[in-house]
Image (cartoon, rainbow, N blue to C red):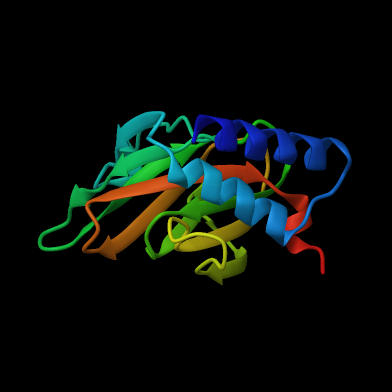
Length: 159
């Protein structure tokens, strides 16, 4: 199993280095990231104003959602390391909204539900972000813990 993971990771590295970005490459990255154990965990805040900063990246982070009185949800802060399009792969089909530091909604430019490659990827959302803090708000949902992987992906919005 470890050899397969190394092989798939090596393949993704080669594809990225050679400029071979595509929906399939992104889906593969999410399947690998979401298929493993969590590399970090964070508790979402019920209030966007108190949201903690999440260590999101190409490794899986499990977000423990807050109890919102019968359903779960909550917010975390994500700070991209560069300007561009970023895709968020979620392990459960949970609604996501994104707001900038001023509270303005950031449009989701692409949503893809499900995966032909794995069961771990339930939905991915893509948005154009700058290297500044954003509040990601999830839910409401029955899901208590939400696996998430973030990937920079300008290729996700090109036809």
